[in-house]
Length: 459
Image 1 (tube, rainbow, N blue to C red):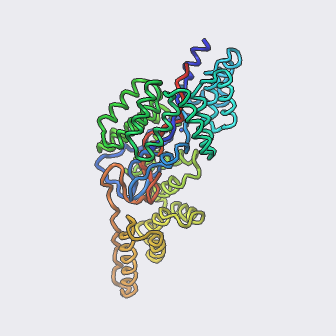
Image 2: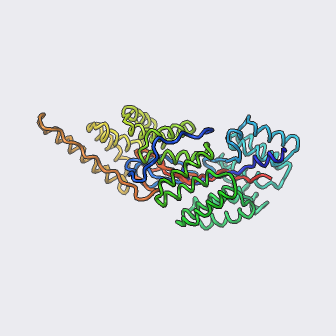
Image 3: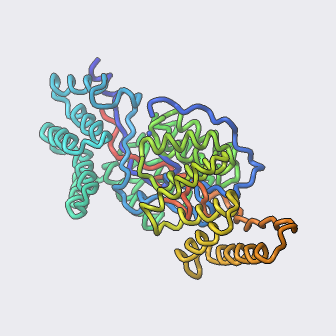
């Protein structure tokens, strides 16, 4: 019975890639409004592959996890997330199996459990115990390499990853690390090579399918990427990252409803998978379902309170709901702590010009936003025209007799995204790809499913 329960607690550790987003124990309520494919995302962001919020304008950036394979380490356990936490029934079963039967797999799963919880020292200790019982347990060596990487010990991290591959050339966590690094470097063929090797050793590993599909996705081969996602969903039970990637593929095909459905299903499969939650928030904000977007954004901020992109996206959602004093107060608060952030300054400019309609206040804010750009910046020309127009309106008002109607300001058009993963500079948030950063204004672009910390399905 214990061995069967261990199988149920088998883990797959995924390293983040760029995807929409990651983890809550309860699925979020259904959005008040389902995004309308016919709607135009004018002041919200596009979809991304990582975990970024909405932005208004600019290319959707991939998440920092893409550049740093150790950033935002996320582990997906093939059990109910509520049962896979310190103090849970799942932990008790693993401890019992480890203590009574001295199973290295039990110790390894405990290490993964604590790694997922961010308890790095405790995780390291259980991986040490795993290796005491089974010195050739390459996955434990690889995950100790991940821990070194999370702590900034790059040389030690690389040495352990290489050691794991030397012990077992098919070691999934190590191969997935190399695949993620290749993806970050834009070397998609190399990423595919590592994934194919890993599949020979662990044909049911979620990370492998996510990385492999992501490589083809970025190469522009959507048909093959979609096929790999389907194969991965049929091969194992860690579905959220793959469903999230399916949503990204749908967005590339301009299938907005299909994308929303995939992100929603990913969130239902694992409410703790942040990329799916972020991508849902991004889509709802992009299609002006502000009530639903605000709810999702608040869920993200409850887990990532310092996430600047989603803080700005919250201001955009408040603005969309007509809560202008609240949006103004939030942006002013953010500017005090981050005075050189273009996205904050830009959204503050838009708020005062187009919504509060205070030209005197807007001109200074828009000039400040312009000063944070330079020639070649996607918003440089637009802001220059915006500032000029506001000043002209102010001059007209100064020379207009009191009985002449005040001219109505002409809002500067916000660029309309020309593809699912491009959006105007955010006044909101953009979706996230797998693993995955943001635009000039917070993005909520869809993310590729972050490859969660690697591991192997335990035996």
